[in-house]
Length: 193
View (cartoon, one colour):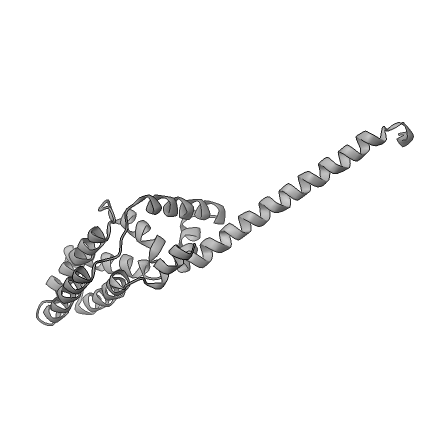
């Protein structure tokens, strides 16, 4: 091929076009990597769980981004001081009741968590949707919710021992504490973002 016959203007335009396309590709890939890193940092163990569940980082990132968008449209709010005190009192009574009636206390804890979520503004759809919604602002304790709820389900089926019930209360307590806390770390991260 005779390169002397190539118009220099076309050659320069081709080089510029290739350079622009490479730059766009690099920026796109960096942005995707940064978005995944942001999701990984925000969701912590929930990110890894979702990757495993979805089978790829790309699908997990898409699902977690959808969760964020969904929850941002909800009217999630902090508890008023009087509400916080009322829920704390209910939890304390519930814990005392555990000694005499562990089965009843776990069932009530599941109900109290749902009431707390509803008061905060979370919709009361099916359990998986509630867990997904909670994961946006409370990613470090959502697995506690899943574990405790699974034990509560086994309790309803008559398949939960006393040690299971004690563990359920511990898991519910971790979620409860996070959800009644004033401006907890996950909410502050949301506000900073």
